[in-house]
Amino acid sequence: MADVVYPYDQALYSRAYLNCYQRQALVRLGETVPDVPLLFAGSLVGTDDIREQIIRRARPRYDFESPVLDPAALALLGVTARETVVDDYAAARDIALEAIAASGFALLVIDVFYLPHCVEYRKQHVVHTIMLTGLADGAWTFVDDNPASLLCAYTFPEDVVAAAFENGERRAVRTFTTAPYDPAAAATGAATAFAARLAASTDGLGLLADAADLLTSPWTAPDRAVELLYDALTVHLGARTCLREYVRRQLPDPDTDALLAASLAGTADLQGRLLIGKVTGTVDPAAFAVGARALRDTEARLMDRLRGAVLQRQ
Image 1 (tube, rainbow, N blue to C red):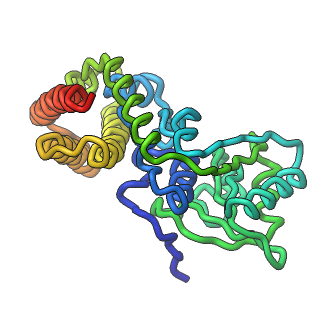
Image 2 (image 1 turned 30 degrees about the vertical axis):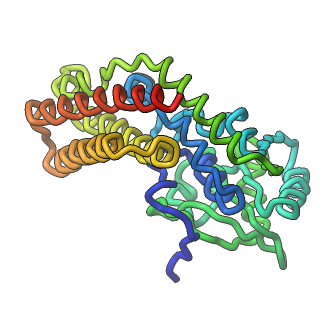
């Protein structure tokens, strides 16, 4: 049976940059809170941060830390997020059902080892979230990634979901409440937060300046170097996709949008080189360095343009 894909913007709300919790929350909140894209003011992440998390700390790209769901940013939209840690599934069940009755969903923290639709089923323990949407006739309906990382709707017996929760590393339920908000004040608040984040940015673009060096490092296995760089660039691509959505709403400017488009294209080109390298077993460091330098220059121009656009708006 074919997966039933949940209706959402697959390019914007992808797993390239957003972790499972962020994506599920944003997709569902966006159905009732029209200004959710303002939260992408927090997607202005620097390449230094990406390098630190993905290259140096070897953090999985699906677990990249970013301030997209910052409580202050959510509050501008009348949204309050809460995580409740419980002792057992019975308590989680009550909280989830109450949240679903109030807002239509609840995020349950589980272990993918116990969910049959996950590629890690009975193979690997990974902390994850699923978006519960209803319980009927002894079965939960929920939304989660399919093997292609698309959000799909599933229905599983309650005991399956209970096992995934009870045997997980972290027993928690994440819920959201919404309240009326002032759209104009939300836009102003998001702009203020974005300006502050931009002013505080000290990104040295080291990821792009030194990318080719990792490919020739005698201390890193070639396939590992390719994998790390691919993951880092994937996060960068996803972050710039989300940033573009915010900028189009708040700082509409053809030149800025063109630079964002160029950044996305340059990142995709480097990713393509790495994908070929995964197949052939080699990546040309010199050619890769040329592309990385071009992307670095694009990013530098983009940051300058954004600073100018923010100053004009203030």
